[in-house]
Amino acid sequence: MASIIHSLLLCFIVLSASLSHTHAQLTPNFYNNVCPRALSTIKSVVSKAIRREPRMGASLLRLHFHDCFVNGCDGSVLLDDTATFTGEKTAFPNANSIRGFDVVDQIKTQVNKVCKENVVSCADILAVAARDSVAILGGPNYKVLVGRRDARTASANDANRNLPPPFFSFSQLLSNFQSHGLELKDLVLLSAGHTLGLARCTSFRSRIYNDTNIDSKFATTLQKNCPQSGGDDNLKGLDKSPNFFDNAYFKALLTNKGLLHSDQELFGGGNNDSDDLVKYYSRYPNDFKKDFGSSMIKMGNMNPLTGTNGEIRTNCRFVN
Ligand code: HEM
Ligand SMILES: *[C@@H]1O[C@H](CO)[C@@H](O)[C@H](O)[C@H]1NC(C)=O
Ligand SMILES: *[C@@H]1O[C@H](CO)[C@@H](O)[C@H](O)[C@H]1NC(C)=O
Image 1: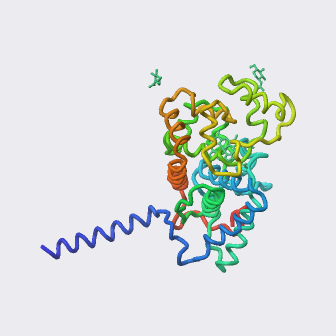
Image 2 (image 1 turned 120 degrees about the vertical axis):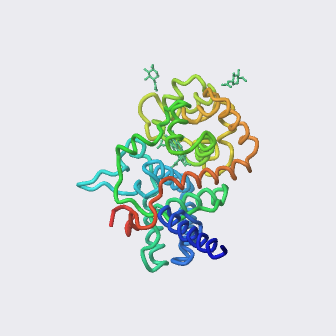
C-alpha cells in the first residue's frame, strides 16, 4: 500500500514538473543563477536615464504597456522597420509618440557586458525598466517577474487593433482590457500610469474643445498651448505632477480635470464601480501604490514566450 502511494506521489511530482515546464511560469528569480547582476544593471541604467531626463521613466513604463497589449509581453514593440518588414513602431498609437529606444539599447549593451553572454531578453528589460521607473519616481517597488523571451515577429495591424485610443468610451475601454484578460480594477489602476508623463496636443484636442465633462477653466488654460489647428506636438503633463508617481491623477478626475477623454471616462463615464475605485484611490495613495504593483504584474504575465519559444535577441531592434 505504502509503495503504491509512494509511486503515485512520484508520478504526480513528475507530471506536475513536466506540466510546469511546458507552461513555464515567470519568476522573480529567473536570472539569479544565469546572471545575478542583471536586474541591478538594468536599474542603474534606468536611474541614470531618469536623472538626465525625468520623463524617460514615463516613456519606459508606456513601452512595457504597448509591448504587452500587442500579442503579449514579447519585445515586439522594439523591432525596427526594415525594407522587408513593418513592425509596430509606425502603428497609429505608437508613431511619433513612443520613445525610450535608445535607453533600451543602452540597457541591452550594459547587461550583455555584465552577463558576458546574451541571456537577458528585451521583453524582460522592458518589464524591469518599467518597474524601476515607477519605483524611482516614487511608486511601488513591486517584485517584477522575469523569464520572458523575445518574439521573432511584430504586427502593425495588431498594434492598431489592440492599443486603446484616447477617444474610447468607458465601455470600449473596459472591453479592450477584458479582451486582454484584465478587469475593471486593472483598467482603473493601470490607467493611473498616467500619473507619469506627457501627452501631445493632438491626443487631447477634441477633449478640450468639445467634451462637456471637463472643468471649463482647465479647458481654457489648456487651449492656450493647444490651438484648434497647429501645435499638434505641444506637450502637457497627464497630471499636474508628471515626474512623480502619486495619486494626483485620481484627484484630478474627481473635478473633471482628466487630460485625456479616456482618463475622464473612468469617473463620471457611466460606471458606478469605476467611480468608486477612482474615489477610493484618490483617498488612499498607499493602497493605490500597492494595487498598481499587482496590476502591473498581471499585465506583465500576458502571453509571455518562455522555455524554448522565441529567442533572446542580441539587438532589441532586430530579430537574430
Ligand atoms: C486605458 C487606456 C489608455 C489610453 C487610451 C492611453 C492613451 C495614451 C495617450 C494618448 C498618451 C499620450 C501619447 C501622445 O500624445 O504622444 C499616453 C501616454 C502615456 N501612457 Fe497611456 N493610455 C492608456 C493606458 C496606459 C497604461 C495602462 C499605461 C501604463 C501602465 C500607460 C502609460 C502611459 C504613460 C506613462 C504615458 C506618458 C509617456 C511619455 O511621457 O513618454 N497608459 N497614453
Ligand atoms: C468639435 O466638434 C465639431 C462638431 O462635431 C467638429 O467640427 C470639430 O472639428 C471638433 N473639434 C475638435 C477640436 O475636435
Ligand atoms: C449608479 O448610482 C446612481 C446614483 O447613486 C444610481 O441612481 C444608479 O442607479 C446607479 N447605477 C447602477 C448601474 O448601479
